[in-house]
Length: 546
Ligand code: NOJ
Image (cartoon, rainbow, N blue to C red):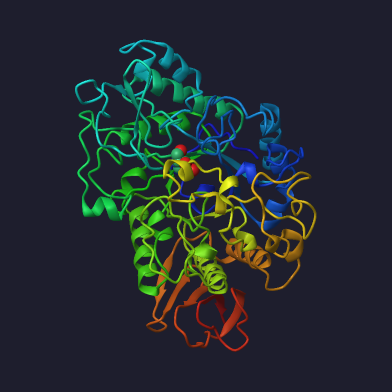
């Protein structure tokens, strides 16, 4: 793949990412080549032909760096190497080269908000004195109260409990996530320069893009005020006017990184994991900031026609306002799989994070049916689509993981109130039988349910109507009919029907109602269910009009 082009225009309207399909790989759970029960880089490389056949343009690989894996690798101990359990730097280079040979780009995950507590910088900070240069790379403060034994403010960690931990000499450090993930001090030029260099390190190894973790969190209110607990804050993790989320200062950092990327003279991109409201989203997408930012607003929208139309309009409007394209996703390693989410019968607030919860009232068949329909809807929309590994198999969230295998820090940090995100991270099934359904030769790091055999890649390959074949057909059809022209027009096909036409003339129709509806005259390119007698409720079809 020829990336480098000295006269590349970084805002080129034809850049691949504007409509690219990106497949998210969670390395621990994708494929285990060395038989130790944990997925690895070689496992990813061995399955590239599968991804090519699926029809994706790129992979996004979740953190693969040396790490104690307290938060699945989002606790990085060394940003310039590969975790020995996942392989070596040479393996990563081979993966990038092979992916490029197959026409697949590689996006890696960068975690700038915090390091691991086992990062040499944090170890040095603990060994150094208050006020030292080593401590200034993180956010250390004195506590409140007579002996300073109360945290500096009332900020809470996303995973539960106070966001501050006290160290031996009495100072406290900030951790917006687990206490093994100390927040870096982005007011410190040494931190900024270090990350410029980390970007360059991976650019030199040929990566095509970066997914930036917690990209709305690096800048904190310098006064470190207590948070006012408002209704909005309790109801939404996208609350505005927050002392450590989505502050103006992050845009300066975004622009700095963008300059580093643009200097490389190639079409590398970065995508923001910014849990911000739709009003502020365009700010991240300005031509000198991020190329993409996930439209989480779409992800958290509950099942329903009007809500979906509104979320789609907001995302398209936000992107277009600044000359960008929307970035859709329905599932990732932090949220309940959408095939399960849409089967929940109880009202759930999806705007709080992490998006997991009890499966008290669940209809799995309904979830899969709606999930498949939603996937087809997403793949027909203008812009880029991110798929999460296993969604092409229709994998459900695994609910019944026993407490002793739970690995997500959310379980401990929430004092066992929330099971956490392991249910969407269970290793993939590749074959119908075998000790781990083809994931590897050993017991997988999280147990797979028996139902995974029938959902495996082998079980679904070549089977008409299987979720895997639906995705393959859809991605091939998308390349022909849904990209190349970003135009998009809503159609009115009734109160319970969401329908739109793309520039090629292809129409996408999702029936939210109970009754089967007639499809327009023409050829059905792909559908989420049998449409021999029309389009039933909770189903989606793409039609090329006659
Ligand atoms: C977002 C990541 O997607 C999630 O998995 C992680 O726990 C937090 N950021 C903290 O890095």
